[in-house]
Amino acid sequence: MGKKPELLVTPKDIDAVNRLFKAGADAIVIGEQRYGLRLAGEFTRDEVKEAVNIAHEQSKKVYVAMNALFHNDKVDELADYVKFLREANVDGITFGDPAVLMTVREVAPDLKLHWNTEQTVTNWFTANYWGRKGATRAVLAREINMDAIVEIKENAEVEVEVQVHGMTSMFQSKRTLIGNYMQFQGKNLEVEKRDKERNLHLFDPERDARYPIFEDENGTHIMSPNDICIIDELEEMIDAEIDSFKIDGLLKSTEYMEIATALYREAIDFCADARDEYEERKENYLAKLEEIQPENRKLDTGFFFKETVY
Image (cartoon, rainbow, N blue to C red; front, side, top):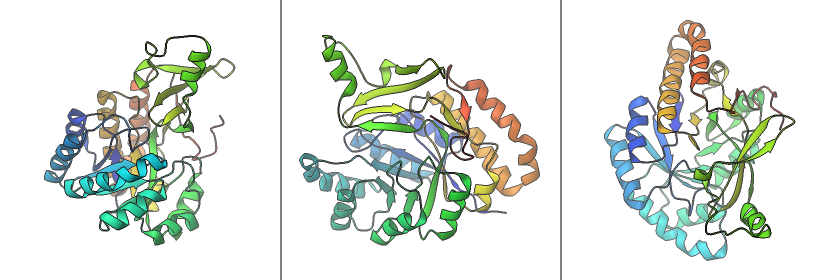
């Protein structure tokens, strides 16, 4: 029996926390937009506490995202939020900005830190650099292939987390690009919602690709036109003992996430414990996920096998 990776998901609210744990998730990432980037939903402090209670009753984990890049005006708030997270008994903090690491060292040195900058964890030296600074996990970039992932895991002194499903971030600017454009066109910004609910896309007719785009407190985000899905290609990473597989639920319904979580739960269990069974079923898992994909969002294997070109 191989070592099983943690199955990590992103719920959008407390209802989703309950449902995704029931579907087989081992851990969740939640937080609030003020400190975390591209979250599936907004969790107040009370909801963070509630999520921790739900998780810990089932021996599951809650990580809180503080992976935004902070300007001077927010640096003074970080200690208060980190102290709250320590008191709430969360299992870890995801960070990209060293300001978070320095704050945690100061006010909550026992809290586990996961280094996540979305794009820059591309080699094991970087993973170990942050490990020696205090991180216990590196969240790998979405743009590296399977061979590089396995090599990083072989040489990493920290846990390794890999996204296996969902959309990925292609671009972020701190500037409100859509808002600026609408203002240029003379549109009323108060009326124009530019958040995730608005369902705005950049459209590339040549490739028939639609890139979701939204704005929030952290600026403008442009997301991938396709969703990663490697439910039928898990063998190599399970054999390499990758520590955590993440399903990103951004812009997905809880119903979608429930089905995806349950399918990956079964796939991981069979792949680790009964490989023949997994080999037999994996095409079926992929077919089931294709059935629930939103219109205009194809599934692909991202950069795992260097197929995707944006």
